[in-house]
Image 1: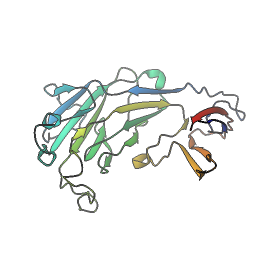
Image 2: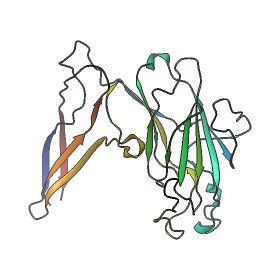
Image 3: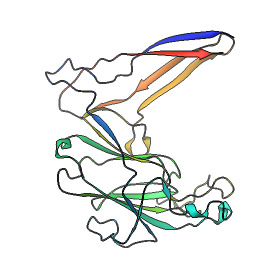
Length: 254
């Protein structure tokens, strides 16, 4: 058995030091919050549930991940799981110290399609089954004492039709996977400065985040080139230059 040690020096463009401005960017000015607790669920289509002041006091209190039809598991065949429209809502507040920063919502999965609202305003739709999606809500949220509300209308019907094309999902087959509808995966809230590494959420946000992959793989020589790409956005009014360096030691036993 051989032990192979690979030493990699990868430039990931992590914005840790500024050379074009007296302002210093702190790499810790990025927070990721677990947004799973404190959600409310209503099974059915509730009129006006997208509005911020809607009365949801009677809704069921849940914690994500939560499929609204999860009780069907192991009771009925996957093609007989409950389908239809449900609503999820969450009330939250943001610190006044975060005002002026970027705020992103990340949904790790929605089944099958969702319509999303923040404080009564539509922020987008997602029709890619169980894939992740994200939204920039920086200009829609309140900071300080004023409350914010996220509302999500989700339809997990097998024959759901895409809004633009009017066609059903070509890949959705009742014998392929269980139809656990709603928000069966994690939700996260990200707060960053206006210079930030993007999230790997191409749906809606059109960003790629950090991507690590291998190329020129040679199995006989047991070698490969490891590549790392990172997308960074600058939404300030000033040109900034950043340098970063990350050393990685990868140990492989073959």
